[in-house]
Image (tube, rainbow, N blue to C red; front, side, top):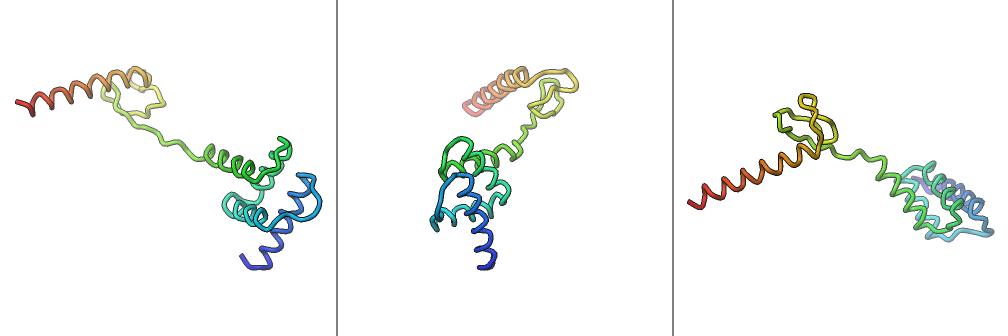
Length: 129
């Protein structure tokens, strides 16, 4: 980002922040720099929206704006899906029903836990002899 773009984007953020938070004067350099860094990471529209949410909650704090952006970023990230082998031998995702036997995750988990414990017990008995 060039110095001119930095000044222009900073001025826009500063004006928006002052308008939303109902303050007069100027925003400090550290706060402005922090907002520009957040805008680089999350996008200007998201930062504007987070400032507006903070103002509606009557919280005028950069940490609050950061928290909003971080929380929304975590929400948008896809959760990893666990692939398991069902008691019937069919592999499927843990958050889905088994297409063959229609078992749900708790059924499969209990069965898998018993099977794993038996396997470990057998391995331990075979190695200790």
